[in-house]
Image 1 (tube, rainbow, N blue to C red):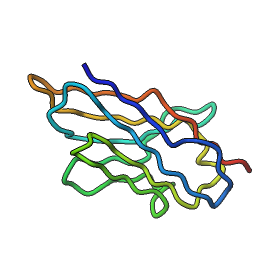
Image 2: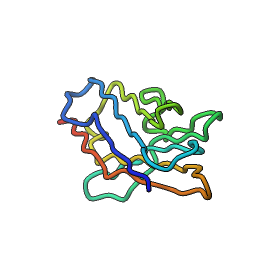
Image 3: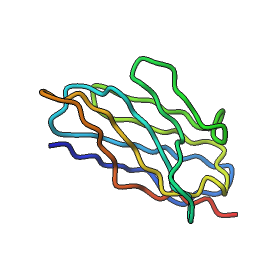
Length: 119
């Protein structure tokens, strides 16, 4: 079917940058929607950034101006460029695709990747 793999997380000092990648592989015709979510320690999952392909990205207020979502349809991959990272950005980051497949559409999640910004 479809596999989703995230990469690029880690430990970064405040003010630093990271770039997360999320690649989908398998039975895929095209990407319809891509989104990044995060789950801070002890909190519920929240939206970070999202984009319908060909449309304007949407960002949470807490990351607007610091993070940027982008995608490469040819590679079935999305990215999250994170700049000026803050301790409150510490979370498990999850990517989400809505994909057009040969005979259907489907939503798929990555396994989650840790980003830690120490205070």
